[in-house]
Amino acid sequence: MKFTQIITFSLLGELSISSFIAKTAYAQINIPQMATTTCAVMAGQRKLDRQALQYLSILDDDFADANPVAIALYREVIKQCPKTYLNFQQRKRVSNPFRPGYLVKPNPTPLLNSNPQSDMAKYDEAIRQHPNNAEVYFDRGNARLAQKDFQGAIADYTEFLRLEPNNPKVYANRGLARKNLGDKKGAIADLEVAMKLFKAKGDQSSYQKILPWLREAKNLP
Image (cartoon, one colour):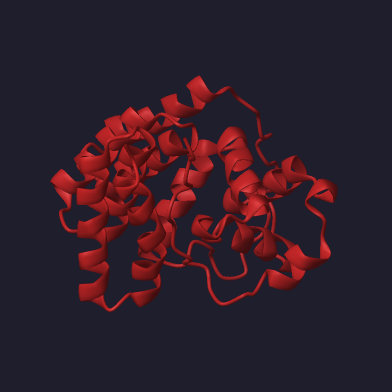
């Protein structure tokens, strides 16, 4: 069964990465090093420069375009610094995540790799501390979807929608999870709601991206 990646939306700006991807072969890219740099910037341990901004833009790329570098970088960042990534995403939702002219911390905390179980435990702790914050359920749902824990992702997206109904991207992600589980009826229902909401918002781009996913769902046995 084909696994469709998560739908995400760019929040960092207009920096184009097409030339970077075109000129750099995937096999030559050091994804772990890119992730280490990205984690350090998000944690305030490294000053934001052109290279770091490029990495952040790649991390923020739309997974619907199946950019292999963006997908690989996201997975490595989640592996290396899930809590830092979660905190950074939360800051982006409310403001510019960087302080003007901020400096690197003099004694940065080493970045430690961890296994998927401990990574998920950090999302669990964030939800324990903020049980009524819908966004932390969305973040954990995305992490679960990336790990192909479709049931867990559905549970988190459902909790998000209980707290904040009518969010089209959450309906879209839950529809993808249901599609990958073979839940034809549930996937079609969620994706159709997402398309309706995106259309009401005038977001034609996202509406068009969901069309092939809906077709795939309708072709399920």
